[in-house]
Structure formats: C-alpha cells, structure tokens
Image (cartoon, rainbow, N blue to C red; front, side):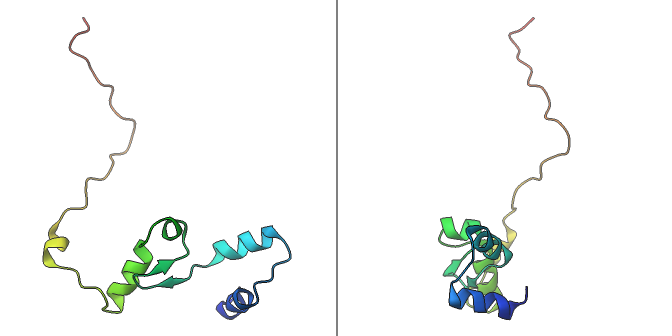
Length: 90
C-alpha cells in the first residue's frame, strides 16, 4: 500500500469490514512532533518515542548534555535467571 492510497482511505473513512480497518490501522502510523502518534503506546500516553524523535529531528526539542550522559540501564543477560539461595535452609 502506498502512502497516497493510505491517505485516501484515511480521508474517505470507508472500510468494507472491521478486519480491513484493523489491517489499515496497523499498516502505518500518523505522527506529529511532540503532540500525538497513532502507535499503540502513543494512543495510551501523551508522548511516545516517535513523536519525540521527530521533534529532535526537526529541532523543536533540544537534548541537554546532562540527559545524554545519563546511562539508560543494564541490558538483560541471556539465559535463565539464577536460582535465589536462602541462607536459612540447611
């Protein structure tokens, strides 16, 4: 599906069935910088990574050096988690 076809369907708002609507809805997301996004997370929360990313790309949002230096967190190690040992058991 091309973007022009997708936008034509969006403007007409006519689908033959709900399955067609669900397939159309998951095929593409509408994103506007720092305001909204139609991705699953963007529909639940105010801002998602897509809208923030576009705002950074279009220079509407500046990242401070302090935010760049903050570590994002540890990655999960592969494999099964280790069994927790208790000191009270013999």
